Image (cartoon, rainbow, N blue to C red; front, top):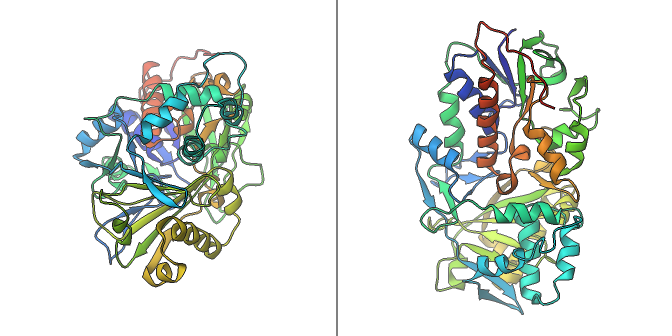
Length: 450
């Protein structure tokens, strides 16, 4: 089975990359280990609710140009998410109208004296003038938004991500896609030529043998049946960082021949963040009684399990999402689902003043996906560890114009860990391949980019 380019992974990065290459007439194969596409976009629909809900990516942050262009291409619409925050402090919920401004005052001190990198925890402990409330809000934000462990996360990496935020659209920070996030990747899937068998699901890549201008991929079905070898001139690897760092015995681990030079250093500079997330369906929207203003988010301190909750406002649906990132998410990844639900409801009971009995009577059901235990992901999304900022940049450059990496882990700074970062990285990988003058009838010239 031959192609000009093989793309490994049918998440948004792989689909965007393949879409761009196909437009230019290249023969492309997409190999996806799962029986579905979309990667860490996982939209769920319930026949009892008109509102779709997200078990993976949900928000669009800022105004990413590549994502907005894709919306135009596929005729997608989006709407502003409610950005009103309430913080549980001293036994009551308090309005935080200046939530982002208060966080930015802290992040503005990151890397004030550029030098040797240190952990975000060491940075936070050096900030003696920060109030307890702001310290807790900052810690909960970093653990939740970046899914990172403050003991391991790089101050320099966090500083770069916070300093390069893309301009917001009409003053709004966050958006949701109308009809569900899966509308985005379905746009790419529907654009694939229907008669060329480009997308191969349940195709688990086991080994990549590569030399300059030549790639051989050995794969099998998810039930272990070997498949004929796949051959190409180049390969774009878009699997999650958790899979790239997986031990050899892991289900989705990939064997390399040869192991790409400098890849190990790049991988050691990053870590896969972990997240636990539940969407709870209640009988009514009792939380609306807590504030005169529409509620977007509820926050507890980082000492709580599931310290962050959000609604689907401006839509009024009886859904609440519970979110935990960082070390507590790692801890809970080994708990039973029932234990995690019970723990989440305990936090919700405390911050809303509703009894566990009341919440249990109101609860209609819940949905979750344990990304940490999913063998095709092994975590949520990536972050930079202490001293790793420069090493990670290596993944943005091809190896001998043959081996390319894309995905959220390869995205720069603020875009790392996001759908738009993954999408943009796939487009950039395609552009680099096209710059070599690839065509279906030609073999690309070889040049080393070390």
